Image (tube, helix red, strand yellow):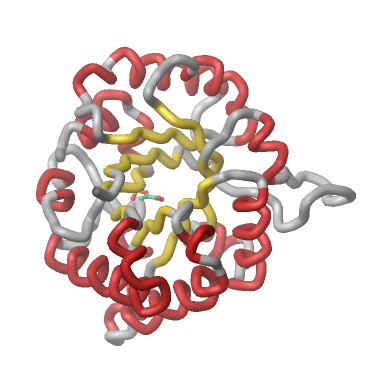
Length: 250
Ligand code: PEP
């Protein structure tokens, strides 16, 4: 059975006190979430210790939104995978389209981050997805395949087993436009087949999340698809009721 996951990417939102209030709200409603669904919150770095404290004893896991591509040293402003682990982070989002687009993250950078995250016992949530013009040109399969091959194909099966994949069409992120469940299922099945071409049966065990304007109203239809194992949620992760509403959608 693949793990069902709903992960919240808070991006650069909330102050520390607001983040703690948000997770307190999420934790207080966890009784409504089926016990086989894993919830993960990924706040900004500055919130990780306080949010982690608020999550202690709950079923909600802690993640970060990024980590450095170097282990330690003179890299002003960076936060290492080891530092995140020392703050009790379990997960780290890698390759989000905003990092690829605004901070120039390439497969080379992501290979280094992936290796460091895994060495430090973090579970990477690896994001892939095409831009609008790429989908319109019919190139979405090619783009997603390259994003998978250039990074995930460098992992051992043991490492791959630790990874969660998130398919996030860039044209659906924060735009209110969602992929139809058929569009999402088609590419999720393609991602699983691509993983199977390298890792065989292990591909059946990998959770593949959908991300892009997911909300309580569209999550049930998306999550009912065979190869969609949950969601990576942006905007709707900033309201406890919406985040919990999505997690109740299975
Ligand atoms: C995201 O950026 O990971 C995301 C899915 O954002 P939103 O839900 O706001 O589209």
